[in-house]
Length: 54
Length: 435
Image 1 (tube, rainbow over the protein chains, first blue to last red):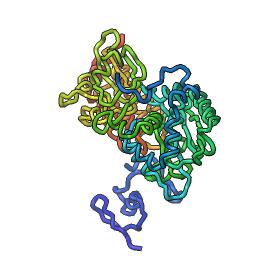
Image 2: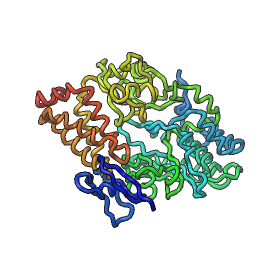
Image 3: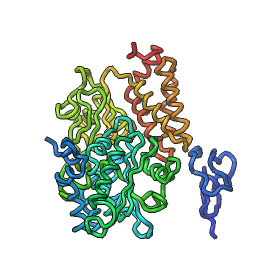
Image 4: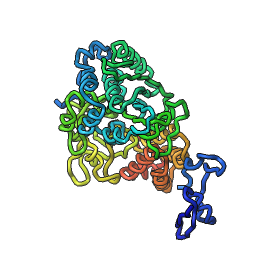
């Protein structure tokens, strides 16, 4: 599967298709990562509800 | 006299009874549609009428129906949003209480157009007395063959249920309403997918307001073109306005869209002017969620044109100098009203009704209430006013459902238009209008 190029704050990163913006930011790490309360990677369907990342 | 579509026979005694309604020509639209029109022709007629959703957003009804997914093979549902809880709005209750058969007739027409076999009326829990009126009307319709199997021998069957909610404001948001109807906590869903694709029980669903549905019988009887002949620009037909506040004649009025606001407030046919001959100070034109406007801005737009009761004219000037038609809850305030206290009442309401899912709304509404209480009680500082604007900016657009926006807009607009009054509260360290 081909990777997708994403640019966040001028930092480029290759991610798998279907990756959320939050996870893409976490791949970069550091100060790019927004705060998030409702996302838990092991819980399917979680994320997107608390809106702290916006 | 203005044309009456929704409240035409509203003063006839016993209108809630089936026989009276039938004698006045009721259910003729159902007869016409089921016998001579196909479902698509009904949708086409509604599209032609230019009817827009009367719940507040003003989305074209025909277009909304057009989005429904007919290919999936899943059952389709038609739901009536009777969860009318917007402060200042009481128009749907008026229809449900006095003319329930008009609503049921509209439900049959809408369900037929969408191909729904089961339809629901989701009614607000506080309106329990209206629920019993509607239940009785549904029973009468079943007995007379207008609901149930094979309606009027047309081969079309429909079951209609009335479901009372628990009285939460948030359940008026359509996806929260569907969650609540499914028996869950009324938390709005993330959109997309929209209810037209994944709605009630995961099936295609259309949710419409009571007033929208109640206009359907007239549109089918007289044709969509006749309906779109009324009104101005893209605001077609008539609208119910529930006028309240400091006016001589509060109540529910049906207006043709395009009526000048000045005429609505001061003519004897409608509100009849301000009480005790006081001066008009501010107007909330469409239920508590829309931006508040000063007397001069509600009567005339910033360009100096007279403002009309229509979707376009009220929105003229954007959020800087305009507002929205919203749900039609028309709140008039005279010069004895304290804007801070009024805003505090709204903020308290939104804090209480926030569902708590999104952080900006859950936290922000609480802070706004706290800060406004501080200012009203004379403990505010100048920084607090800017802090309120800042909070409102951070709520707006960052939440799943429009409740966050609805909580932010009144605050932002009240400070924009009445900033001196907030500053006076801070300077005097008390409310200048209280004794």
